[in-house]
Image (cartoon, helix red, strand yellow):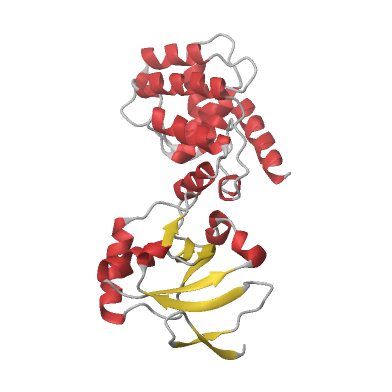
Length: 284
């Protein structure tokens, strides 16, 4: 890479590396104390105060490290000055503001300036699945808005809520890539109702990801009656035991479902068939 020099809007010479054009289309590397020229776009994740505090501790000692500039895109240019939207580095920005330190940033233009926040961050560990959901929802994606509303309404963790709305899917890629497709909201509302009734009878939570996924798949088995399962659990709640593996949960559900039944139903086998079909769908 070629080492180049450039003058920023304060007249100070700054050194930076010329990055490959097919990765970033860099206009320039700048430094400023004018915090008012930056805004955080809606699709970005919320600012986590704990992370900002950690950055403040580091910046008090080392300042803003030049090799980690904030990434922004130009949104307005005129007599009153320039305005920018923060694409990456909002936590560093908040820390710098608290400490009244100058902000170091790169301005992007061209096609790369249109990069989505989720795409920019999907390979970074700092973003949680909830962060991706919020980002896609803030961009107007109705499926993610539905997921968040459903999750909050029923006070669920993200993965069980996602599993219910997609009838058994738990893969992370559709959430990261913004490709989530809600299968049937009404169906999910019915199933989560059964889960709540089952949960009320147990000494452990029925809302673990593995149990929810197994029960969701059971509800897709032709001939399965969730009311019958509920009756069996009410009579013998201790028979339904907490398991970590889906294989064990399937076997336990079948045992409880068929308790004193003259015609045992192969529930575990049928659930496994539904699971296999979901895996094939995910591969496609």
